[in-house]
Image (cartoon, rainbow, N blue to C red; front, side, top):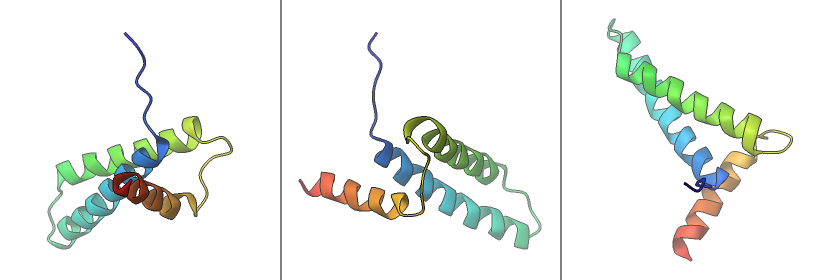
Length: 80
């Protein structure tokens, strides 16, 4: 079975969006004095994907400007 290669920019966009939405859900649950387990698991998955991209897929690791550039690259891929 061949190994599937995925563009690191797609993973960065997915991880960023999942992390942002999960963080807002965790904060909302914390304010309401409940513990949203699905949001905590989603936050861990988003941070795990980001760590994987940082450690394994980007030589030299991620920089701050890699995240907005990934969004721009993804939009350009869709528009093309």
